[in-house]
Image 1: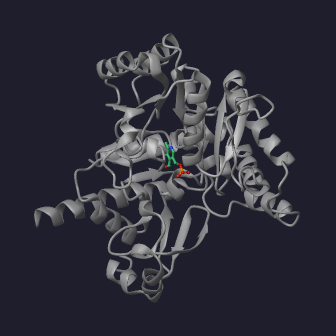
Image 2: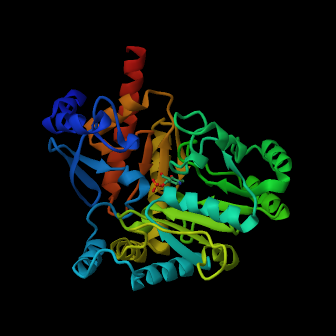
Image 3: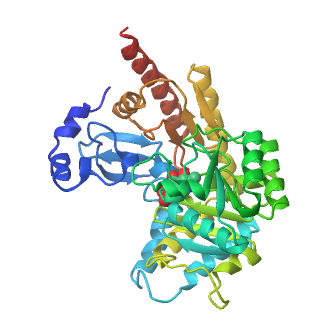
Length: 401
Ligand SMILES: Cc1ncc(COP(=O)(O)O)c(C=O)c1O
């Protein structure tokens, strides 16, 4: 049975109110679907209910962040324990120490600092790399999304200064020759290479092992840093996806799952590199953020990660691999790894999104599917069947059959 029509959402009084006060009626371009996105009203486990009472299995999970779905009882209980004792202080709290200890134990990465988003984490890691090396140029890969700061924004996007091209070089992902040429050209001024090992926007295809090894060796040889952006991929392996590549980054950036559903980002790295942020040293890089490392986020993040150890990570990845296999059996083109998948059909993704949503599945607007621990085998089977039907419906409409 099909849920409400897109026009029901566009005409809904809440959408009309929203358009009066916000461009297109909402804040995040990444969750906008024309003509007007549904509004979430509540979430529980793997399910979300919208303002028209339509219930959907959440395969978006706030763009991969909600590893335990909605209103997880462990996270909820932990947050309720601390929320009555203050939500943010002009002092550090023990909670940030506890989360940093957890991350160190999980990753073997020595030092950590926290921010409010992955965007901030990437921005600060870039600044840290420039400060550490005394060089300016960052090399990154085309199609990878690293947040919304100028250095990582699409060069052609409105509002991005043309001058950014002087200090940020973009090369095709996986193109060793282009990478080597860029590294050679900027040899004396290369601060870091920034890489996402399975970039979502570029298609959620895991980077080649040999290529990643080469990036590691080439950066070391040139005295530049390797920054691995694990904001999305951290959920795929305890300690992060980079571990399955057998490399040690100089800096990693995290976000999403480590906040337990609250705003978060983190930079981790070797002690000597992270020392650039040490305010007891001369010329340290500043690190602010009024709400960085607030005790609510730190507590929620720790509670979420405590329930996402080796067994849970493997179980969720196995479920994702099974879903990928089932989709392929049903003839759907799909990429990804473990608990992260991407529908790779050449169809109008907006049309596909609505077919999926109306049939009861909330995906990313780019066809992203991110699993969460409360999903059952039945939920996953329903997702597979719904995706196959939605893809077929979209194709039929496009061909007029
Ligand atoms: C790989 C990667 N880096 C950075 C970011 C930015 O994180 P945030 O949205 O928390 O600013 C994202 C967001 O999706 C991401 O996928």
